[in-house]
Image 1 (tube, one colour):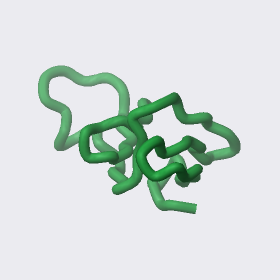
Image 2: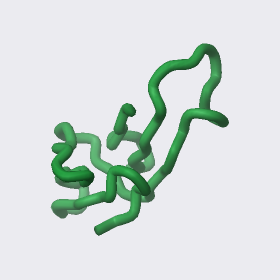
Image 3: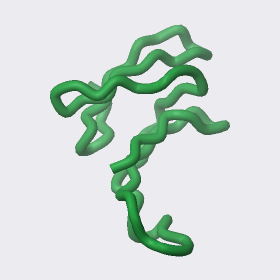
Image 4: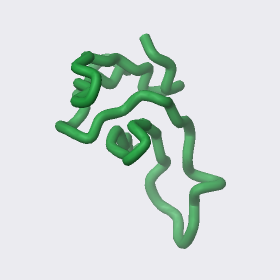
Length: 69
């Protein structure tokens, strides 16, 4: 599993590792409207923790579903 929290639109997503070519239809497990362009998330007990640089907030996402906790 690869967790991505940085994007120009401030989104986060979980992508299943592996595959060939364009796997955007088959390997993206979830997308969330919250993200950050700074730092790396911390994974602990099924959750992703990270700071949002633009809004000055700390966020927690459920790593399995992408829901904001």
